[in-house]
Length: 297
Ligand code: NAD
Image: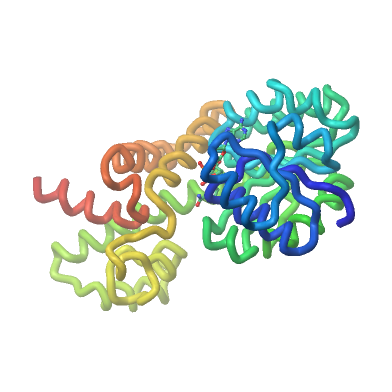
């Protein structure tokens, strides 16, 4: 990739993503509102602009990695789209609502640009190692132009369809994950109260129809899967606050699409409550503690 990439939002995810682009020889100009994020990025070889607008005027591709949909829409409308050169490719990697992603892309196109939604999974470790999974929505030609950059920052890249469908794939996947972690955790707690050993339940379910990632990779009890967060006091991993956020976006999509999805709504409510307390900063598999605590109370 020979052009210049502007990265707007140099936080936990955007910072290391930008650093990997710079380390691969890409000319990266960045901006963040927070001084500490700027200092870390500068040390990683990223040129720092005085504002988001100043960054995008120099860029062929603009990557945004911001907290939520309102930040993306505000940044696009507040000056990024107007400042960019005509035909700039905007890639939003933030996790935002499907409807917000479609609105952001429509704004970019109306301003004479091109746009992709490209949310990620893999967390801070994936961002640092350049092994993120990208779920991409938008035009095939734009995905092709983005691909060399996405391949620097990520491992698996799936073009999911038109604008917004990258976000759609992410919320659908994370709804499976939230619901399945709840089911696995409730099953372990039920097993405990029936006198069933964790390892015995694991040995049965991991090789039977209960098999899923929440059980066999992120197992919510210590022991059966030594690398799961349960073995290190639920240090994330995937923090409860992020699961609550993503399930909230799933509910937004459920309501917007008019779909009957009781389990998804229930998981969203359970993890929202979990994330109100210390669960926000624990791995989401610590929901099992919440289930035990409520049973005893
Ligand atoms: P973060 O809060 O660490 O970083 C966001 C950065 O955006 C902050 O540094 C903030 O100052 C900056 N920012 C906000 N408004 C800005 C603006 N107008 N101009 C420039 N900078 C601005 O958050 P994060 O953990 O890096 O997450 C970013 C996105 O990635 C979120 O949508 C999140 O849901 C998603 N995500 C996070 C993870 C994770 O494990 N952290 C995993 C997958 C996806």
